[in-house]
Amino acid sequence: MKHLVLLEILFIYDIYAKVHTETLLEQHIFSDYNKIVLPRTNSSKPIKVSLHSYLGDLSYLREAENVLETNMYFHVEWTDDFLKWNLSKYNVKELAVDYQKLWLPDIFIINGLGDSRYLPVQNTLVHVSYNGFVSWWPGGNIKTKCKLYVSKYPFDSQLCKLILEPWKLSVEQQTFEIAQIAMDDLPTPFEENANWEVTDIKQVTHMFAFYGYYNMAHYELRIYLKRRVLYHVFNIVFPVLLMSIISMCSYLIPPSSGEKMSVCVSIFLSFAVYVTIINNELPRTASGVCYFGLYLFTQLAISGCTIVLSALVLHIYHKEGKCQVPGPCNSGKESKNRVTDCVGIEGTPVKETVRQNDNKAFAIKLDYLFFKLCFILNLMSFVVYLILSNS
Image (cartoon, rainbow, N blue to C red; front, side):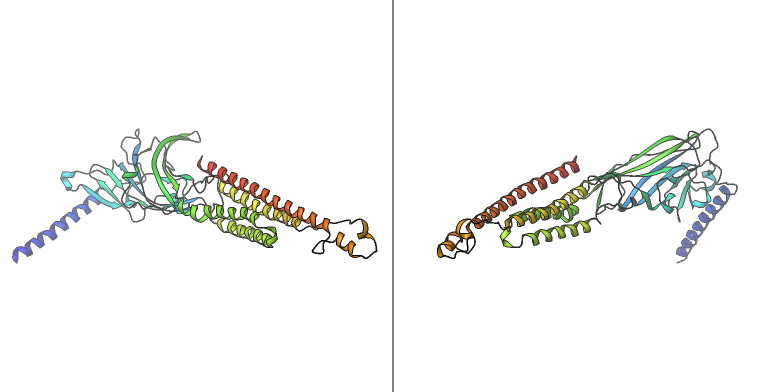
C-alpha cells in the first residue's frame, strides 16, 4: 500500500514538474516576443510557408448565387527563428500555444464571402518545436464565389477555386510552398456530395505583380466537380421528352372525335406548368446559354404551334361547302323528281356532300403531314441538344 501511494506521489510530481517546466519555457520564449515582427533573423530570405489544403466535404453549391460552401482543413508550416530553445535545458520538444500569441502567416481568401475571407482560426492551437518549426491546423466552413458554366446542364462539369494570397507581404517577405494531393490521399473525413462528384483536386502556386509595384505569392486550390445526372435525367429530362411525344401524338387523334383541341390545350398547359416548375431546378444566374433551357422553349413553341395547326385542321374538317344547284332545284316547281335529283339520301345536296368529303380527306392528310413535321422537329431538337451537351 505504501509503494502504491509513493508511485502516485511520484506520478503527480512528474506531471507538476513537466507542467511547471512548460510554463517557465513559455514565459521565457514569449517574454520579449513581438508577433508583429517577421520571425526571421536573415531579412534577405523570405519566410517559406508550406500550405496544404484538404477538402473535408462539399456542403452545397448554390447555383443561383454561384456560391460554394465547403469544409476545408489547412496544414500550415513555417519556421520561426525567434521560437527556439535549448532542448537539453528544458527537456521539452514541443509546445502547444494559443494562436494569438505568435506571428501567423499572412493568408487572405481572395474569393471568400463575408467572414470566409480569413482562415477559420477560432480556438486553434499552434504546435511549436524546439528548433523553431511551427505547425498549425486551422479549418472550418468556408464560402467562396464559384463562377458556373451551365451550357451543358445537366451533363456539365464545373471548376471551383479557393484563391489564397498574402494581403500585406510580398514574395520577398513570404512565399508559399505546396504539395499536390491525389484523390486517394484525401483524409478519411471526406464525404461525398449527393449532387456533385469531386473528380480531382489540384494545388497551384505562382507569383504575380501587384499593380506593377512588387511581386506577391498566389495560391489556388482547384476543385473539379461533375454533376450527378441520374436525378436530373429521371426527374427533368425524361418527363420533358415524354411530354413532347404526347404533344406530337395529338395529331393522331381523329378530328371527328371531338376531343382533339381539348387534348392539345391540356398538353400545352401541362407543358407550361411543368416548365415553370423545373425553372426552379435550373440555375437562374450563370454564364453562357443553357442548352436544356433552349430545348424547353423549343418544345413549348412546338406545343403552341400544335394548337394552332390542330385548330386549322378542325376548321377545314368541319367546313361546310356552298352549292349552286342548277335546273329544277332553283325553280318554284314542286315535284317528286326535283327533290330526288337535287337532294341526297340524308337530305343534303349532292355536290355539298361531295365537297365536305373532300374537306375531311384533306384535313386528315394535313394531320398526317403535321405529325411527320412535328416528329422531325422533335427529333432534331433533341439530337441537337444531346450533341451540344456532350460536345
